Amino acid sequence: MKSSCSSSTLVESSKRTGPEVDSEIETAPAEVDLYALTDIPDDDKKWKDMSDKERIIWVLLAILKPILLVGLLYLFICSLDVLSAAFKLLGGKAAGEALSNNEVLLNPVAGLMIGVLVTVLVQSSSTSTSIVVSMVSAEILTVKPAIPIIMGANIGTTVTNTIVAMGQTADRNQFRRAFAAATVHDMFNWLCVIVLLPVEVISGYLFEVSNAIIQTLPSTENNGTSENPEFLKALTKPLTSRIVSLDNSAINDIAKGEGQANASIIKKGDHLFSETTWSDGSVGALLLVASLVVLCICLAFIVKLLHSILKGKIARLARKLFNGKLDGCVGFLSGLVAIVVGAGLTILVQSSSIFTSAITPLVGVGVIHIERMYPLTLGSNIGTTGTSILAALASSGNFYESFKLSLCHLFFNITGVFLFFIIYPLRKLPINAAKYMGNITAEYRWFAIAYLICMFFLLPALVFAISLAGVNVLIGILVPCLVLIVAIIIINVLQNKRPKVLPSKLRSWDFLPEWMRSLAPYDRIVISVKNKIVCNCENSGKEDDKESPSDEFYKISDVKSNAFDNDAFISVKF
Image 1 (cartoon, rainbow, N blue to C red):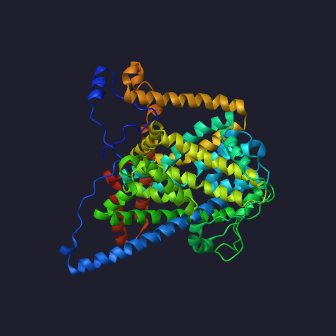
Image 2 (cartoon, rainbow, N blue to C red):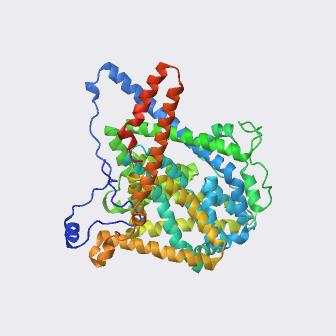
Image 3 (cartoon, one colour):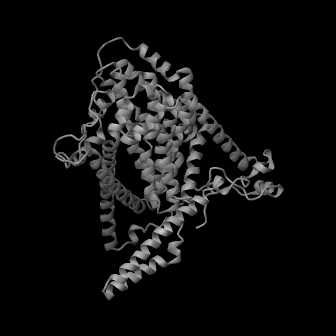
């Protein structure tokens, strides 16, 4: 299939320059929207045209499919819960120790990266923000250095989306839409941090606004006693608590410097690992593999079921429901309504990861347009701040300071919505960036794994390591890198939109080596490695054939060997 991605590299390249290119650009037809919702064929067989047997089967399937879908969604959400527990077992104590290092946290960039890494390790921004709020409440950490950590938690929570999107790699167009839907959250959060972190460091905007609100509250020593109404947990806990139960307060205690780093965080009780002699890391590794397997299986069946259910009139109704707009003079409020809906649903399920991960497959199969998912995602960002507010209300220490941090979290997300949604020209930035990422992954599917590893592990770890060397070193390295990236982006935009304003040499990147302007060389390496693995499997199968005395086994092995020898199989693009 011909690639539909024309911008699959960091710096796009044009093959020709000159007047003929300018004329082609001016007369080129409009590009096809690869993210447009496809037409739904009206191929439903009418009831009156069905036989009695077909009617019975139709009724049975109409009843069983929704029940099966709900069951799969339940297992999917439970697997996300177990995945979170696995990450806590693997890195929860390390996350607590990282948050206990106050000297490092005074550097805002280091705090931001710790927020990303800690949230990735515990697989929950609600958990990481609650830990930070409790540390502020206990007066171990002050509000100002805690703000960058909260910003980082917003970024780290989107890793679950990316993992879920990779479950739709089988279909190129579905994967394009699903990965773009997953990364639109990333793009929004990174843009907010790039704009608001310097503003906060220079002016203290979030701190001052939150502090002004706190000053209006009546002075009292009584702390809140509100409990977190985890509605979804009440449904999943009967199953997940039978698998493993963790002591989240142990991570809090380690972060506060009160707990032992070598103590287990697995609770004693009635679950599979209550009496285990395994280490926390071993249990976490087992649960990580098991939960990922269940998650992928559930996701695959959910996508198949959605394809089966969302046909004809039902598909058109679902699209109208999710992508509908208000009529008349209030049409511009449609996006704001979607934000409110996203915030409300996230507050209800108490997890932005679960909410956005649940709707990502719907974008992949073409039920929700990415531009409608965007405001739902923004709403989930606002909704997840409810957890930190409830943590502050339930704090047993300095209520005002912990509540101030929760308000900073809330205003950070609200300011981001204002900048990158209310201001319409800026609204397109995260959406177009996400589409760009979707196009790359549709062309080079291995890029999704590379993106996941680099953006959520290697980049935060590298920047954190550089920040430890001091502010001057950090500025000396990051500022030139950022200037270079911005320059490349601007030149790319001008190459696509206004090539005439650029010098002839800069109208393409052909003067650069291929490895600097294209992912094709890396793609060839990946394909080469894949082919070697296939060939090794083939050779291994032939050796087994020679050692086996059974003629029947020879026949079976020959069939497998022929399958691997097929040129079409070997040349399939990864």
